[in-house]
Image (tube, rainbow, N blue to C red; front, side, top):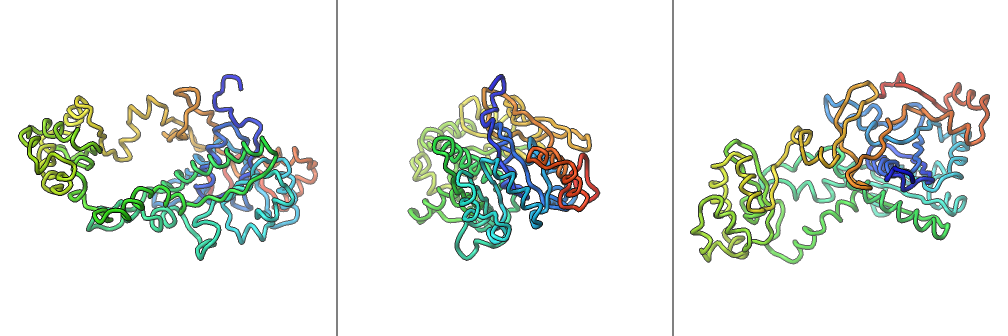
Amino acid sequence: MGTNPYNLLDGVRIVELTTYVAAPSAGRLLADWGAEVIKVEATPRGDVTRFVVPLPGMKPVPYQFHNANKKSICVNLKTPEGSEVMHKLLKTANVLMTNTREKALVKLGMDYDTLSKQYPSLIHAQMTGFGETGPMANDAGFDNVCYWALGGAMYASMEKGTAPIIPPSAFGDNSTACTFAGAICAALFKQKCTGEGSKIVSSLYGQALYNMTEPIMSIQLSDQDHYPKSRLENTPLNNTYMCKDGKWVMTCCHEYERYFPLFMKIIGREELVQNPEFNTFAKGNEHSREIIEIISEGFAKFDRDELCKKLKELDVPHAVVANVPDLLESEQAWDNKFLTKFKLHDGNEVVEAATPIKFGGVTEAPRKASPYLGEQTREIMEELGYDQATIDDYLERGVAICKDGPSDLGDC
């Protein structure tokens, strides 16, 4: 392994037939951990995140983050020649990772039932929107639909009496990607021990339900746990408060009797510590609105930094409610190398979030730029045994694409 603590999956080859974010994000994690990830992109434009953006004014940069440390081969799998290239590649692979819907996989001959007969040791890992069966199995879906809306997080996160929240782009995708990457590692361990392949199916909807475990359980066991909630109806010590400067702080204290006296000390209302209507968890919830208003009035006397200092001195669990620009200036993030700087293909330097796992201490995973469309097509086809004349013919006829810079199709 040498001096690189991220070289854990050295020797593992993953063929990635993916688009958008959730599955490519998992591939990025595995690439960071040392796997050789070969992204198979469709002609003529490749992964749509090369040129599609979710928000007005946003540059098409998600591809460059979620596909870093990978190789790209661009072939038309709907042609006999492209299909042959894919099968030669699969013969060398440990894993096929895809988010292609089942009907399309069957048409391509890339579904699990077909490939498991041809390559019994291959791990077939499929990311779906809603799962592999049921009435929505083949429906189109993205994280806002599968994860946030249908999964309940959008409704449960809204402030009562307002509209459902607008989720941050790809939030559910990246959460699901982490679980997906972990499952692939488990299957790789089985493959190494037994030589056997596995079928893995992940879904944005399933991840959302798992992340909603506490609300799902609680609402069945309590007639008080209803969504959406108002902050004025929530437990007083696990709540948000606005400071004098208009900035917000979140406190999160589950041991009510332990922390209630500390809150009262900060706001100068120590006489309430002995008040039996306020000083127990049960009474705190019963009189939540009144107590929240008392704490709100007390906290509003301090600027956010001043309040955070007092909370920290008393070891009260809390954090500032950060906006996106605040993240870029986070000392905690920079000290732990959770953020890093990288140059995009156009030369602009940006701050990006590192993949969230650290190996060997406070370290950074090796970071290579994402590939241009089919950047490694020729290299990979040569490795698979194709001669130069055949490769040139495929490139000339558009069966394959190989670029060493931005294409003329608007990608980055």
